[in-house]
Image (tube, rainbow, N blue to C red; front, side):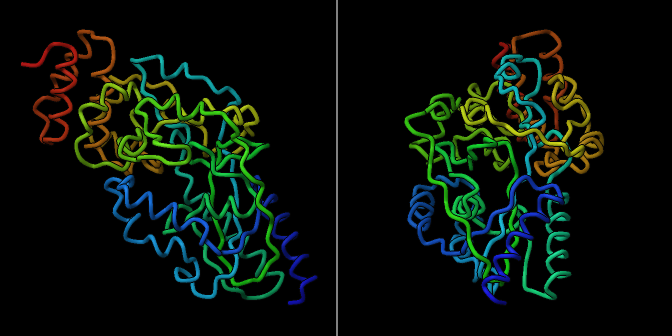
Length: 352
């Protein structure tokens, strides 16, 4: 294709992406060399915790063409998921309620975005004929925030999230790797300035430096990625957060520019935006599987679900109902659940 044709195609792709419901479409080259040292240092410090896949596929993250041969560009897309422009910590100050990260309260975003990316690829095929591509939605060793930063969608902030000057950070990212030599977009540069709000508010002090997260202390990691015992010293700091943590986004000044989503699938299901800890703790495994069907929450499994809620109940103000619920789980078949239940009971002075 001629350069003028590629430029026209790039503009068409961006327009088609918006028609399909993406909030933004940008294009990056695949030279990831600028991110190599940062990634290796992060791994060398073992900040990835038990996420061995980060270490195992590190080189593929830095070499998109090794992941998908003949790749020349990454078409990056953004899909907003915020349902409110209010960024309040109030939900974290209601200790008998469960806090679930906003992105996980509705249906799992992976399938929805993947279908949209496929439709975008189909539009390109209709326009130019067959071409090489592969879609990614948090599904392979891809440095999606780095690619989005390169493409000018925003910058990686001190909280390691991608931040957009006009939309904040409440959005999902995905990519379409392609062999088309499309014109690329220019990076925007960083705009966090001297602000350290995200670093200061982190309950577990997981940010060891600006843009450096020790996942082993991150509540999102502890409640989602970790499959073993949560470190005892971190449990009191977790509050009522049972799946993920949004503190560093809630406090970010750039999220005053939050863009609201119109996707019905992102709306909270089963009251997960205002759920009692005791109600969720009472779910049996069949209820957990049924009520988390099509949800990102299901991936942690029932055992970790109870583990996380037990910690939150241990952090809640003591009541007869909480103690009774914890006692009901003392004989749970899982040693992991029993351990965290015993810890929670100790917080209420009821362990024996």
